[in-house]
Length: 508
Image (cartoon, rainbow, N blue to C red; front, side):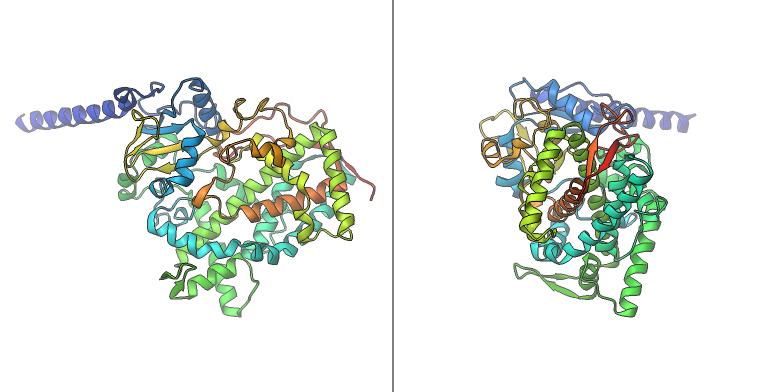
């Protein structure tokens, strides 16, 4: 009896401590006088996430709820973790650029021991991130992009050939699926040197696993919340984010690719070659003169994985949404086609690397698409040291606190972009862009931790769209969704049932 009583007291004491800790967490902003929305005890301010709402909608609702409240940031609970949700553009600029040294980390969960594929550049922090970023920066220079350009054009020409065949069979096509196949083949070729053949085989492994990687999770929402709220404990317990089939597929592909290239001394001067070179050098000398260790095989795996996923999904989604808006706005489509034809004439009808740079209106169309349909909903940062908001002494970001910059919500703020749901590429003319803050448009982030592969992503999207608009006229049809329905299970902005458009060949 005595032992039972003691155990009972221990359990009661532990519950009391846990309740106290939870209460302190959930009243964090209340005690500081920061505007916030009372959180759910487990889900925080993420109620409905992955069931009825995607992350984009959750953030937008929270941002809009406090839009008229005079505060540089408001409280936002990511499950049980109190985070800062930035409202003020000047504060966003400080965090991303001016005071980057205090906000260089993201605080996202990864586990290099039990889930090495999760320890990629997007997730890493501290010296590991700085070292890897320096190592990989040379991979994405304009010179390297120019070298890979012919490969992307080659895949794009095959894409147009496939589109011609399909249009002859059926004028209504799921354009979202087809552009995804195009970007899979581009990334497969440039990153892995593998002919994925996704354009002609809808069951191609790379295509299927690319799609699965974005929606297939190892755990449910509550476990993911635990990993986000208590990352150190989750790492000690060996929690893994990546679903096993996803891990197994990419490990097999990367290992086979590296083994074959090293055994047969194959060189393609692509992304994978660069990773292999970094792996085979015991030491690397960075641009700043710092000497660091070469990559491990697990690091090669992680970087190849994130390059494929980021390059495949962001570019294909952007192309799909751009074509959707161009189909709905034929006058914009006609203007874009006229520019493409005029520039091609100036370059002997060849889509050269220099030619792409001259497609200024296409650039505006893509920028407006990324504003209207921001693929990744937010930028994550974490404070290293206590940070008092300039001009707002009562608003403090404590050391170790998560910071969320809701870029997708800001892109749809009518105070920043009047009539935000209207598709208007002229917003990104040099004149209009000059009248906005540099952080009013953040699809690739900003500052030293911006998207390292943005040049490559923009290049493949521009090539794909230029050839599509040159060769086909896009229009809506009864099968075209309006409005678009998004998949709440996807972290990125992904449509649920495709985007069906009517295509007609343009006489050449």
